Length: 228
Image 1 (cartoon, rainbow, N blue to C red):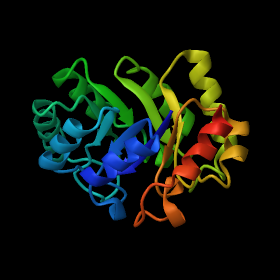
Image 2 (cartoon, rainbow, N blue to C red):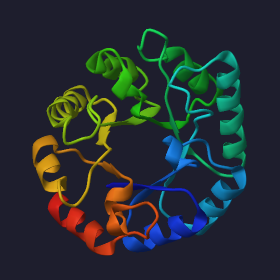
Image 3 (tube, rainbow, N blue to C red):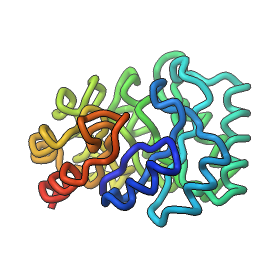
C-alpha cells in the first residue's frame, strides 16, 4: 500500500493514474499540511476511485490544541462527512507531550464509526512506545499511525520503526505507516529493515524529488517491485 500526499484535483487524478493506492489530501503542504477546503475535497472524492484520507489540522503552531481548536476540528469533520469524506488524518499532544487522548475521545464520541490515521504528532511524543500503547486503546477507530520513528526521517528512525511494526503485529494494534524522507533510493534499505505493510510518500514519488513536479511512474514502479 503506497499512500501519497496531494493538494489539488489535478494531482489526485494523476496520482491514481500513476499507481498510487491511497491519497492523503492536505492544504498548505509547505506548513506540513493543514485542513483542505470543502470544495477541493468534494471534487477529489468525486473524481478518483482510490481512498482519500483528509487531513484535519487547524494550525501549524505545534501539536497542542485549544478548546477552540477542538471545536474547529469537529466542525471540519462534520462538513467533510456531509460531502462524502470518511477517512481522516488527525493528531494532538498534551502540554507534557503525551498523546491527547481527550481529543481522540471527543472525535469518537461525535463520530463512533470514524476511520482515523494519527499523524506525525507521535514523533514528538515524550515516549513513542507509550504513545503507541495509548493510541492502541482506540484501535477500532485509529487504523494506522504515520511516523518516522521519532526521528527527522525514516532512514534515521529505522530501528524504532522496526520495533513499532513488531509491536503492532504482536498486539494487533494500529498499523505503522512509515513516512518522511522515503525515496526510491533508500526504500529498499528501509523496507528490508522495517517490513511495514504501508508507506507514506511526499516528494519521494515525484519527478526530480520535488512536489513542484508530477508523479514519477518509474519511481512508483521501483518501489512497488521492491515491496513485492
